[in-house]
Length: 250
Length: 64
Image (tube, rainbow over the protein chains, first blue to last red):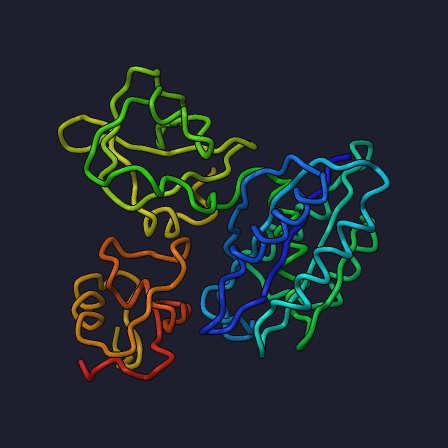
């Protein structure tokens, strides 16, 4: 069985990040003999004064493989972990989906996309979770994190949203790499030209000229690049990726 | 950007300069860094993204 797990709103200004907690849950799942699991993706949600968030309003999601009868164990494990480590003053939410390939998740995906541009309510999330047979639970505070947790699963299913956590940490800024070298990294499947969305040949040289990330695009981990003034391919900065937002994937 | 309590989303040099002299600067987790310079208000744990920029949760942005 394929499952998706997402958490949101687990932190405060001084605590460990939600992404780290997601990786801790993943490690526990693997230690129980389940897995493998995907890398964690960070999904940026709507920034609005009516939405309570700590500093950036993002949720963290991954998927994995596990036996059909392990869903309850995975949910309990993740819930216990959240109860133990979530920061004081946070409003954590947990969402777990046991993926059913016969089911159409259009409503869930739409919920995720809407959470990037609209203020949604807990009752919206509870209804959507019920309609799509997802586990959704609150773990303290207002439990507002269930909105982002559900949205994160929707966006991961959508397959065209989110930065890969920890991606490209070991590449050196201002160094050049061939596409084939970059494709050896687990967090990178393809290097695409941002304007054409075409994959670049393995021999193409890329200048890693800034702090950048791979992103989820059509269910692949993709590094988007563009040509610089001297007609060489260069990475685009994280701030540019964030600025492009939803338009990044059009 | 006229709000003195905010930095616009791309005031990179200013964010770097303020953080270099800030006693409360503490880097956020790496996945939340946005500026190229590690020491920057944009990478600080105590910044909060708002509609058009960032606010300092320690209220330490100087008067511009």
